[in-house]
Amino acid sequence: MTSLPVANQPVHRSGALLDHLARRVRLRSETVLAPLGLRPRHLIALTVLRESAGSTQQALAATLEMDGTNIVGLLNDLEAENLVARRRSPEDRRRHVVELTDAGAKRLAKAEFALAAVEDEVLGALSEAQREELYCLLQKALAGSDARCTTALDD
Amino acid sequence: MTSLPVANQPVHRSGALLDHLARRVRLRSETVLAPLGLRPRHLIALTVLRESAGSTQQALAATLEMDGTNIVGLLNDLEAENLVARRRSPEDRRRHVVELTDAGAKRLAKAEFALAAVEDEVLGALSEAQREELYCLLQKALAGSDARCTTALDD
DNA sequence: ATAGATAGTTAGTGCTACATCAATGATTAA
DNA sequence: TTAATCATTGATGTAGCACTAACTATCTAT
Image (tube, each protein chain N blue to C red):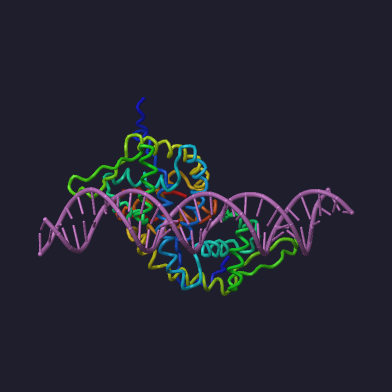
């Protein structure tokens, strides 16, 4: 058959769109975050740490899907600016438990505030409710579950 | 638990989440797409070209937010496999109008089909309806407008 | 007709994000 | 004690991508 796979079920793979949109965000974010001494991946790490504080570095490597050795460097950056703290786990003293410091939380908040303009630009076509919806969906996809989405959508 | 000192306004910046999720998709996509001779950014380009066929390379560079010189290489890859065709614009013969070939459309469809497993894995926490919703939101954000989102959400 | 701008191509340079491998010290588990 | 585990450091390699410059073909204006 002469493949008309499109008619039956809508394909609708989000992967490429996700990649594309993320790139747009990242490009702009880099310049906005630079004065704060952060890079996009620092922000990702801080964001993850805010939600799941007290992660071990292995856990962090798993959720960020990065090699452990690169996590070290990432955390070195953040710890050098006192944004995160590594302390040894009391249960297993080989492990380092990583936590957001107060300064880290503040910096993160500041960064997010600074990114408002970026999101306004990149997500400009979305209404406030839709952005919130997007946020919830992303959150949920990343968390595996939880993340309550109060859905009130209009076009 | 109320661990929020930032409680005033919900920040909810999607940027980092978007970046994070896109990375997850990209990592898996690379291995899935490899046998098809594609890379994530090829897929992005093909996806864009499917929607807005007949773009000039400049337009492509703009929407992909890539440097023009890199677009050339990208299209060389795709044209070498006959997935896209460059033809000169009749109005302005300096311009190249880029279009998805039939083979390109097929390959794209095949790639999207192959990515089903990836999305199942990465977006596993989302229901079918939520994935559709996500798709629509991404589409809309990238398109600037259009993209009808039939919203039927449940948790 | 000719001069300048514009679209695309090619090649070269360099930065950055990563993965990967190897070696080390600290700690736990067998 | 010996072996496995976690974090760290350093070295090496690959790839995406930006940036620049030079070149061709074509268009536009004078």
